[in-house]
Image 1: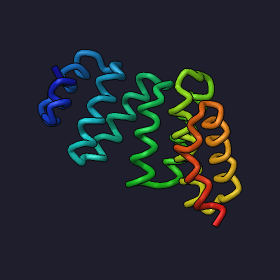
Image 2: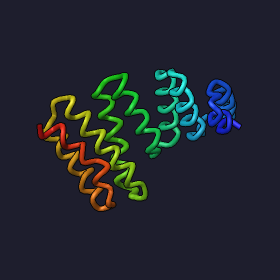
Image 3: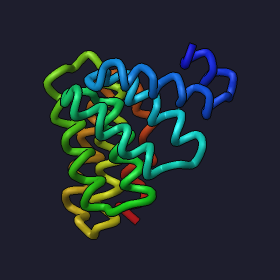
Image 4: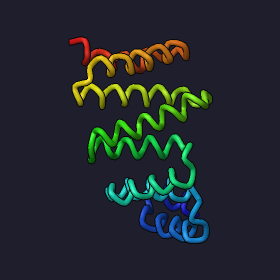
Amino acid sequence: LALALHAEGEYSAAIEHWQILMTRDPNDAEAFYNAGVSLQFLGQVTDAAEAYAQAVNARPIYPEALINLAAIHHRFGSLSDALYWYRQAKEVLEKDRSQEQLLIMVLNNLGVALSQLGEVSAAISSHEAALDLAKKLDLQDDIDYGLGHLHK
């Protein structure tokens, strides 16, 4: 029901149902993650970050929750926190290569955050790793822009 409500744009109602699930099972990583997504759609980024953190606490190898947590910190929080969560996601995704497209995104976002912190060499390495993986998957046209801003 919560997913259907979210799909219909009824984010507040969806959150109410996610909360019921989270109360029933405080280790339900999916419920916390999905609540975070609904909260983010409502612009409640602090609450969304808390929900994603709860999802990660329940399932430390939850790449989507790690990525969303990193993205919130990248956009609204601190770059050092974003780097921490991007690196956690990278570590999880490097161990489970079944989601290589997510790994490309994480490497690219990590590169952007590193460049924003002035760590250009590390940023280039991260973007190059993303590009190498993208070439392997024949997706390089989707990410060639990543290195462009660093070589100017």
